[in-house]
Length: 398
Ligand code: MLT
Image 1: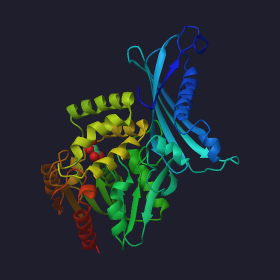
Image 2: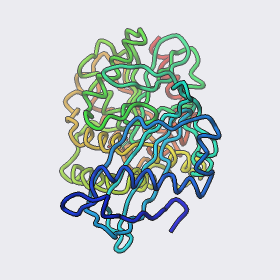
Image 3: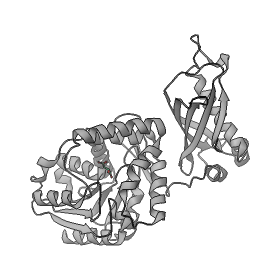
Image 4: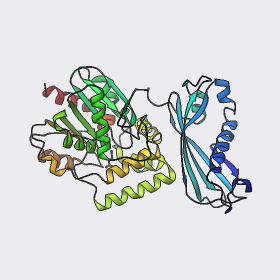
């Protein structure tokens, strides 16, 4: 058993008239497991000592199999999101005798003081679970029924960066830091990064509607859209509906086609694994295909941490939205008049250069650029040439 595992016995008084562990009793099982694991590390009084009480803001439980009196449940806990004042624990209960998955749960906590004001999460909690705080908190904007986390810096013509799956706005850090002279806007899509992750309601339309509301809230009439992979699918939806708001388009390591039948089956399979195992299943699926063999271990670690912080509802929502996305191929030839740059990592395994070449060929007047030494995430693996390519494109629009 590892440090983050604790065992809980199912007692008859936890069970319903049918002899199953009652659904409400799972809350107690999970809560006891959390306290037991804290008792082994920073101590059960870690919150009292720090004057920070963890108030539950959200609970999601999936019940997979029944448990009966006398069963021993092995409960594993992981800190999957560690913000400044909030954190999310993912817990998995398995029957110790045969390893059967009984339930999985996510709990979102906000630390508050005695007056109910948010206060920082005690650092011992993050240290014990070896989780680093998330990226610096950005602004939050409530749009379209969710609160989105968004970084926006600078002034000048605006560029809206839309990140890939299942990542967050911080993949654009180099571009945000260096593209001075432009208003850089980088949100976390709903369900990812520090944005709200509702259980339902994910589609390309919803992501695009969120972004339109965001652009409106920031008082921006027109933007250059820069979408990477999933971000490109969202950009297609945006430009299909509000082309008058689009000053230019950067399509990075993305594709216009919808998922093939085989692709849809693969999405289904990954949804199942993520529901059962959590974000780790998405990390295992994506990480081996994101980079060139030369990428640094630090970059892999940074992206792994980013994926592991993503909630199950956000990952499952994005996978369903991608599975259902429309074919945007017919849109390509209609993009006349929207300056477009198609950019691709020369060693991208997920959306290889041939796809980018086909897209650039189909968009009237589009420019094509390959970034040497980059895989699927050029903005992370080769940030300097990627930013340079974006800058050159932005300058050409003046
Ligand atoms: C992404 O990077 O956003 C994904 O590879 C997109 C996809 O899976 O289609």
